[in-house]
Image (cartoon, rainbow, N blue to C red; front, side, top):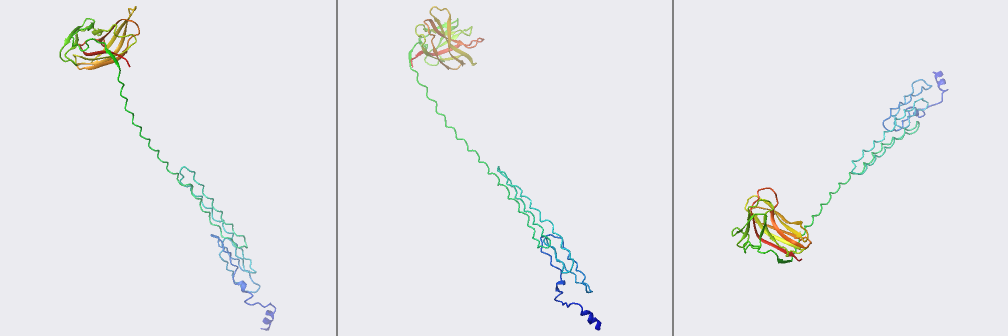
Length: 316
């Protein structure tokens, strides 16, 4: 046994306190998520027999790998994986008429910690960019158009200032006095069914459209004068026919007749007012007359009933 003591005496003294650093491997740095678990380095074999305690490697987070215990060739933990992917850009908001804002760029992942240094935790992904502008405002409805103003009431026609009556026996109360005919119709005096008074004129036996009652006003109608004609007319037929009143003028030294149409209307067996203005031809009249005729040239040629005939000059 003495030789054992002698051998032991050759070694430096070591205590449990001196070997306390062999009990555990160096703790791995706290890393970000998710690293691979770094294996702690295997402890080296001591000179003295007996296996040295195995270093317990801490779980390596992204950061520095765990250091092996002193005197051991422990490998550092693996580098952490790349930091988290940047956040996806925010979807652009449902823009109205405005352009949607771009999504914010994601933050880059934190860099892996260097070996033998304490690894930083990877930065979280950047928040998504804010959505674009809110929807455009609803366009306002157009205002309703204002109601149009009520049209003014038409002015009452001015009263004409008329001269003396030029027609002789226009109401036929004096029989057929001063009345004539165009063509060869028959003129009769009626005493019933008249418009006013006791008598009116009936023209029958017409064989052409232009045949009818007439009156001459030569010397009474002045050249270039303006006149108002009026009369009441009907037929003895229930069918409508067109009739017109025409002025016929001869100028001095001219054998050519000039015709002026005064009024045109349709009539049947009910009284119809015929009224119109005319301007007498501006020449010395050798003859002036007016007559009632049919507007159409085809048969039949119905009877004409005439009453309340008037011709007066328009003074104003």
